[in-house]
Amino acid sequence: QATALASALWKASYLETRLLACHLMGFIPPATAMPLFSLLPQWVQQSKDPEIQTALLTDALKRLRRENSQVLLLLVEGWLKSSDHRAQIWGLRALIPLLDEPGFENLPTVFRILRPAVETARPSTQLDLQACLAALERISLTETLHFLREVIAASKNPEMLRILRRMLPTGSPELQAGLREILREPM
Image (cartoon, rainbow, N blue to C red; front, side, top):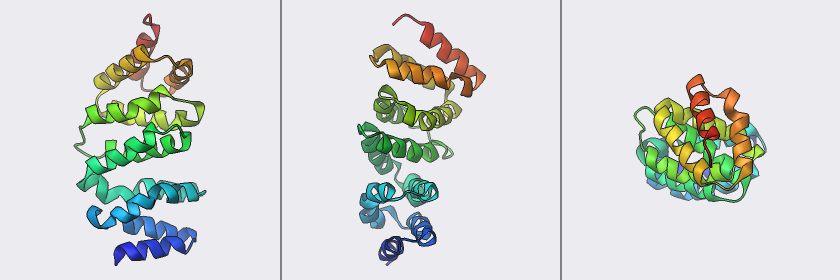
């Protein structure tokens, strides 16, 4: 019944009903909410309001994030692999609350699924990528710098290097120093 209610609230097309639908989705058991999760990309794309998009990528995924992070990582991976920059932004925005969960430590999987978005970084994804790297740094600066070193060494995308250089001033002093060192290394 909660799934049907969330769907009906979404279809009402008002800001308040859509926010309520997102909030309700976050309380539905993940196994029951799977039909709604399959609609999530369509809903995010339909939403022009940033508040609704944020609610879809955070509130609606709350219980999935806590109870079945592997399924969430699969969903995020699909977005991050996409050649559509909007889908990559959704993936980055959905990934950050997972990284902020207390005790989350599945960094190898995160680095694996994040790699395509970093390698194809463009100005439109810069701010969200920056926020994602900051969240990763809070978990492990050393592993984040190691990940960036690997991606930079393997990359053939000069746009990615420009984006990383532009992000330098916004990082922590430790991240700035480590990233500067990586960027100075011969390719």
